[in-house]
Image (cartoon, rainbow, N blue to C red; front, side, top):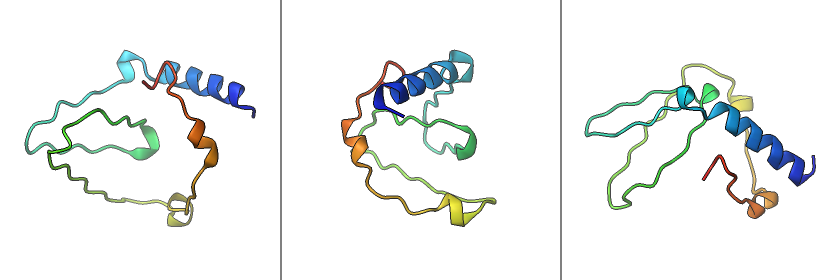
Length: 88
């Protein structure tokens, strides 16, 4: 798929999925625990204070390590990434 068509597809998917009723923003307080299913969520990191400690504990209930933990490499195409209207 050429870049322009791929970008249009991604923009459309993000526009459709990132509507108010489908968006959750967590306002962190000390002691919070958040659990989500990576198979069913789009995650977007928000700006944060780099001087604050951030801890992430990952766990796995089930799955296929052969496919879900497949090695990935550098994608040279990603160097041309520019935020779309949906992921700024």
